[in-house]
Length: 197
Image (cartoon, rainbow, N blue to C red):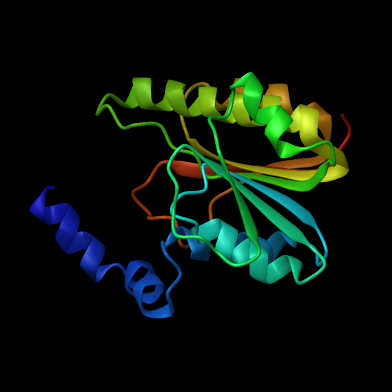
């Protein structure tokens, strides 16, 4: 692991705050900021968290939905259990995953999935686009009418095309970058509210 990366991480206020507050990852702050601005997750909602390990977003979602809501986390890698969160081991895009999620639709689908970084930005961007498409493909089968979809994307030359594919399926569709995202990072978040089908 490069020394500079370790040093930068230790100076990162969100990383330090996540460690202090037991939030599992700095990504928890990203979801918190998106929630504060856009009110993505209502009390009582059914939330599906894709690419959930180590559980930072699931932990935040669990606190937001309250006792009447549910959170289901999906990842190939297991993580320390979170009280009130159902973990499903699986890969987005696998046909078997759909059956394991059950018949009841979700109000919110979250995807913080990232590709394995190759070091070639064009490749990493294309892989990131594929992950968003996979997450949305699953969402089209499990997201309730009027629901919300949020997915991380590495910005690049395919972003406009991807927005054109997803946008018409929602009443409101936008691209945003929470303050907790590193300024030098190309990550952005695509967000659709009011799923039309």
